[in-house]
Image (cartoon, rainbow, N blue to C red; front, side):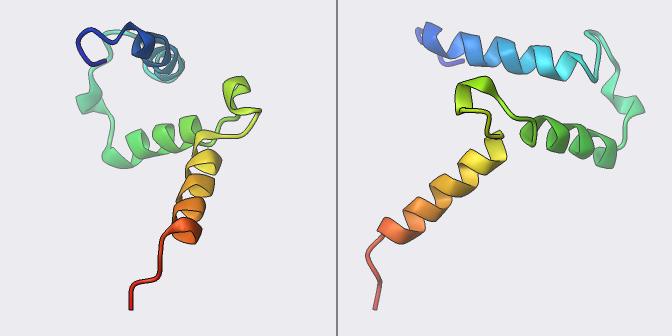
Length: 76
């Protein structure tokens, strides 16, 4: 969270809770390979969220990138 930005705390705490389902607090990450950590991140990013209208974060991000691509002026 940014300093003096309490509205960011809820998202941060929620994400920490999701991560804790895979990696309990105090877990030594050196016991995990980068591939294992990437797999956990993929599972979390592909998990539907109520706050996103039951879409996953990756779906929302892709839609946002698609909107940016469609809204940006063509460079010639």
